[in-house]
Length: 315
Image (tube, rainbow, N blue to C red; front, side):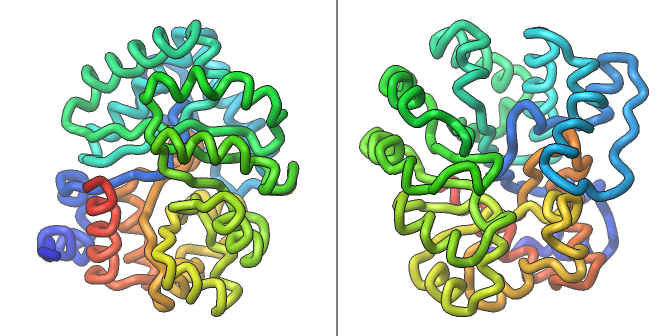
């Protein structure tokens, strides 16, 4: 692994401008929430003030998003502007590997897979031509499995999505219910991922990886509560796509300085740094790295190692 001294020095010099010029990855980004607040504000002419305190729940976060972002991005034009914003943000922050997640409802809203893939593909070519794009299919944890199974063959037949995820309320239904869907996704060659261990337990992370044969976990920070689970994840090379600001703003981490990333890293768990919902949390990947360094949680050299893990995952 070749160490990027410019990245290390930029962290030490507190230089966001330089960090933004250095290649990075973003492996956990919800597409409709992946842009920059200032980008949407400039387009809509609205004054949008980022949240100034942590949320008490996912529901409160969603309410903020509805009343501060979506209200200015109505209908299909507003939705497409948010997708455009996500690609523009990736280009501006030199994100060379970008996973954006989309739901089945988003596909349906644009008239099906053919129109959807063409539309999103054009936005990527126009606004993030230098970014390797990895589309991710996101299922709601509360979804009806039979409805997903009735649609997924057609979706997978396009061979456009590169991975699959389960998001939202971790407690909505047992993770094992998704096994039939994940078997189909695996047969189609998709990377298998899931939101787990953001609000749940370390055992939830272990169970999800085993039940669904996951390749990666989105969040997964609850694993830090169990040495045995961390060791198991490290031994099985299961990567956690961590989103520090999201964790702080949703009160599952006390602060950057006390983030579980430290413990996960020290136990050899593979981790990456990501944005989650940038249109809410208002922190780019470069800012996430800088936040972790400024807090004293990680050294510049350790963050450089994590940056390389993210970029190498695209190879």
